[in-house]
Image 1 (spheres, rainbow, N blue to C red):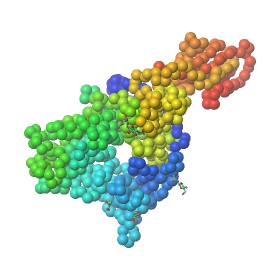
Image 2 (image 1 turned 45 degrees about the horizontal axis):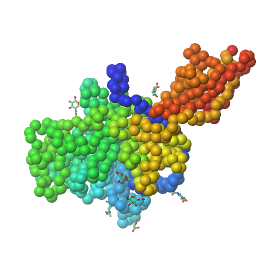
Image 3 (image 1 turned 30 degrees about the vertical axis):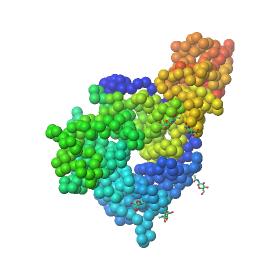
Image 4 (image 1 turned 90 degrees about the horizontal axis):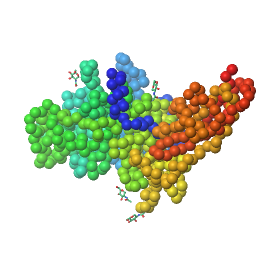
Length: 633
Ligand SMILES: *[C@@H]1O[C@H](CO)[C@@H](O)[C@H](O)[C@H]1NC(C)=O
Ligand SMILES: *[C@@H]1O[C@H](CO)[C@@H](O)[C@H](O)[C@H]1NC(C)=O
Ligand SMILES: *[C@@H]1O[C@H](CO)[C@@H](O)[C@H](O)[C@H]1NC(C)=O
Ligand SMILES: *[C@@H]1O[C@H](CO)[C@@H](O)[C@H](O)[C@H]1NC(C)=O
Ligand SMILES: *[C@@H]1O[C@H](CO)[C@@H](O)[C@H](O)[C@H]1NC(C)=O
Ligand SMILES: *[C@@H]1O[C@H](CO)[C@@H](O)[C@H](O)[C@H]1NC(C)=O
Ligand SMILES: *[C@@H]1O[C@H](CO)[C@@H](O)[C@H](O)[C@H]1NC(C)=O
C-alpha cells in the first residue's frame, strides 16, 4: 500500500514542491494573546485598516498603521445562567463553558453581527459604527439568540456568510443544516434528509451575470461513521442555493427550493489516490464577468496535503446540466435549482419542487482542472487555510497568488500560472508554531492578515526587499508583485503610477526563463575568498549556506574536480573523507538555477606541513557559518 502511494505521489507532482526561499519576518507587527484563544475568527473589510478578531470572551478590534498596531477589546462574556448550566451538564468540557466568538460578518455599512457560543447557548450582538455594541432602550447590549446562527462550542465546525444584510449559516448540531437564519429575506433551511452528517468548512458568494443569479456556496465534508473498510469515510462536497430563493408556495414553504449539492474530488478519475478531507476553500471571483476559480486544500488519509483548483464556470455548468441522482425521468425545461425571483412567472411549479425535494444531489462529480491536483506538498506540513489574490504583473498579465497557512504557523506564497505552480517562499512571522487558524487578504491595501490561536499579524503582499540587491535574484524569485527596476537598480513592487512604468520592470514568471537581466548570469562573489590554513589530519567541514531550495549546489576544487556535499536543509556541506580527499587548493561552492550561476562561497585551503598538536581550532568564516577543525588524536 505504502509503495503504491509513493508511486502515485510521484506521478502526481512535478518537481520542486517545496518552498524556494524561507524567510523569518522580524519586522511584522505581531500581537500575542496571553492565554491562547482556542478559536480565532477574523473579519476584515477590504480597504480598511481594521481587523476584527474573535476570541474567548472578547472581540478584539485591531487598528494598523504601518508597522504599528493598537488594540481595543469589547468584552463579551457568557451569560451566568448559560455558563452554570453548561458546567453542570454531565460530561461537560469545562473550558467550552465560555463565550467563544465564532461569527463576525458585516450586515450593512453601519452594522456588524458578532455571534459567540455563549457556553452552549449561542448568542449574537451587533456592532454599530464598527466599534460600539448596539444597545437596547435600557442601555444594555442588544443581543439575540444565536441558536440558528452560530455553533454551540468552539470545536464544532460551522460556516457563515452575510449577503445583503442576511446571514447564511451552516451548522452541525444534532443535524446538519444550511440556513438563512437572520435578515430581511425569508428564513429558510435544508430538509433534514438533504445533508448527511457534515463538517462545514466555509461559505462563499458567487456572483452571477445579474444580481438575481447570485448563488451562495457551502463547502463541507460528509462524514460516514458506518462506512466499510473499503469505502471512503469522508467525502468533500459543495452545496449551493440561490440568493433570491424565498421558499415554496405550497411545497417546501420554509425550505430552500434551489438547494443542490455535488461531490467534490481532489484527484483524478483514473488514479485511485484521493485527497478526501477538505480543510479550507476560497473562490477567487471575477465579479460578474465570470465565475472565477475555486481553490481547495485537501488531506489524504495519510495526512498528505494537496491543492486543487476548479473552474467555477464548470461547477455552475454542472449544476445547470447534470442529471439528478436517483431521478431517471427527463427533467423539466425549468430545471430544479434555477435562480428565479419568487414573483417571476417562471417560479418553480409544485412538480419541479417535488423533484428537488427528493433528489437534491447532482450526478456529475466535480473534478479539478487538469483532472489532478495543482500540487501535492512534499514536506511534513499540512495546510490549514487558503486565501488568493489576483495580481497584474509587469506585462499587465493577470496572475494568481495563493497564500496557504500551515499547521506549524508558516505561510506558503504560491504563484499559479496555467496549472503550473511554484512555492515562491515560506514565511515565518510568528514565535510559536501553532496552526494558522485565520487569514484575510486585502487586495486594495496589499496586506495579508494572519492569525494562530496565540498570535496575529499583518504582512505586505509585495515584500520585494527580501529578494535583495541583484537583478537576477529579483527575477529568479518569480514573485509577480516584484520586478527589477533598472533605473532605481533595486527589486521593487510593480508600480502603476503612470501607464508605462510597469512595463519597465524586469520579470520572468514563466517556466522557460529568459535572460531578462542581460548578461547578469556572470558570477557574483557574495563573500570574499576565505583563506584557511589547516592541519592535514584534522577533520574539516566546509559549509555552503542554502538560499534557494530550488537551486543545484556544487563544490568544485580548482575549477575542475567536483566534490559531493551533504545537504541538511541549511547547507550543502563538503566533508573531507574517503570520497573527498583533502588537498590544498581553491574550493568553490556554486548554485545553479534556471540558467543562472551564483558563486556562494570560496575557501583557499592550505595545509600545515608539520603536525602541531592542537585541541580544537575554530576558524570563523562569515558571521553564521564556521569551519571547524578538530584534531584527531
Ligand atoms: C495607537 O495609539 C496611540 C496612543 O493613543 C497613538 O498615538 C497611535 O497613533 C495609535 N496607533 C495606531 C496604529 O492607531
Ligand atoms: C443594518 O443592519 C441592522 C441589523 O440588521 C439593522 O438594524 C439596520 O437597520 C441596518 N441599517 C441599514 C442602514 O440598513
Ligand atoms: C453612529 O454614527 C452616527 C453618525 O455619526 C450617529 O448618529 C449614531 O448615533 C452612531 N451610533 C452609535 C450607536 O454610536
Ligand atoms: C455509510 O456507509 C454505509 C455502509 O456502506 C452505507 O450503508 C450508508 O448508506 C452510508 N451513509 C451515507 C450517509 O452515505
Ligand atoms: C518528516 O517527518 C519524519 C518523522 O517525523 C522525518 O523522519 C522526516 O525527515 C520528515 N521529512 C521532512 C521532509 O521534513
Ligand atoms: C492592464 O490590464 C487591465 C485589466 O486587464 C486593464 O484594465 C488596463 O487597461 C491594462 N493596462 C495597460 C496599461 O494595458
Ligand atoms: C494613461 O493613458 C490613458 C490613455 O492612454 C490616459 O488617458 C491617462 O491619462 C494615462 N494615465 C497616466 C497616469 O499617465
